Length: 548
Image 1 (cartoon, rainbow, N blue to C red):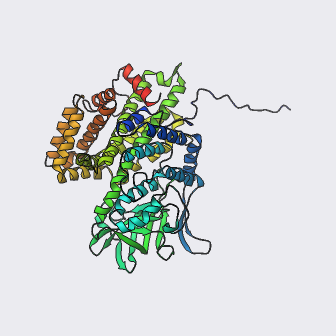
Image 2: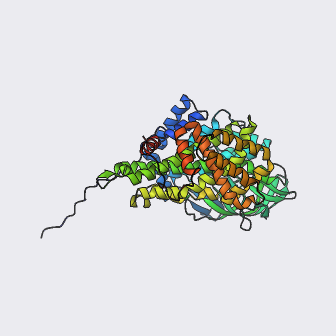
Image 3: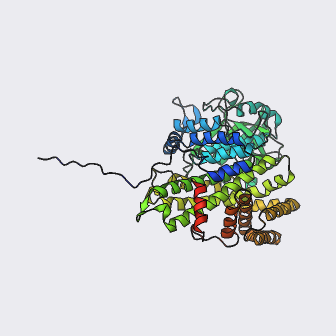
């Protein structure tokens, strides 16, 4: 009897993997933004090496595996001793080690915990932006470690002890007291069940002890529970206060931090987030009693900055994968990227990413200049929440469009875009949701009215001649002056971010800025990408800038 055999079919008309590429050199808008905001030729060379490394197939594989093998909570050891350890796949630790080695967690600080100066924020942001295109989850402890230094500055003695360990470029995942390690990471715990964003409703208590404080209470979300220490908020005698809570007490015993469970999240799967109980946990005060929000907001300002950078990076990755696929995939006797409708979609997406990239790098430039220039400090304070609002809320619908460009290939878990899509909402939620960002813009306006007027005047000047810019500036000023400004805050904050994006882009690519203003300021942008009228030569230029 003849045996039936089945030969595998030939696979064709599929795009090759977008791997083993230079994620910096292929991104002309990023290169130009880095150069415009302080980078030089030596920086460009280093970033290109970094882009090749993170654009490799090996790093892409690590990102995939770290998300397929999610962290596990080991509450007790085999003898019944309480341990509360979080166990990760080796791929996660490899990602952490590569980011730490590049200084993504500390390069904006000197060894003494002072701002590094120069273009440190911009250059570090370029790396963060590149890494987020490969694996975003592990960046949670990376960003919190970097940002924690700003809060620890309120307690110079503690900072002096911790900074030598934070400042190394070694990643040490061992479960051991932080002062014995080659490198350390820090997390944060603010929100509780009953309060959420309203941290003044926190009920966790802090009682003074001979070696610091004892903390009793809970946190509904404590991010990155595998970290070596956490900045937490608790009620002390004088009110809500910031504390440094290590995993190990001063005598070397495991601190009384009891993780109840790890959160089962939509995305951010490689990273652990937890619910936790403190049962008399040792902690030391950071800053004055009763000044906890003022202390920890120094950290939050930096984590918000990273939320915006990561969202821009995710959108960049979505665009790059969509462009790469459509340039290889043929439909109706043409490459997809040459079909007029698809070109309109891709060009509009490229314009959005180019503006987002310019905007986040402009914000990082303001962080670089804050100590020397009051105008830049005002820009940073007013625009950080506005930029986080617009950039982070833009990412989910953008990545949905990118997935659609790949069709079914974009929707399945073998590709990266499904993971990006699930990852994208978190940046709009963490570190303050959209309404909180709008309220923070209003708060900055009320506290620094003159400085805010100067910032808006600077944006008006930087966008002079761009379509719709003057009208947008006028609307923003009027909206923020009216008595019920909170009612229209979302519209005004979005227009503020769009105006700032046009201003940043005008400094780098004037023609792109003109197109962005024409399609976003002069006319409301349609709810779908591609529903704009871009001339073919402009569409071609945008796509070549996005991915040569």
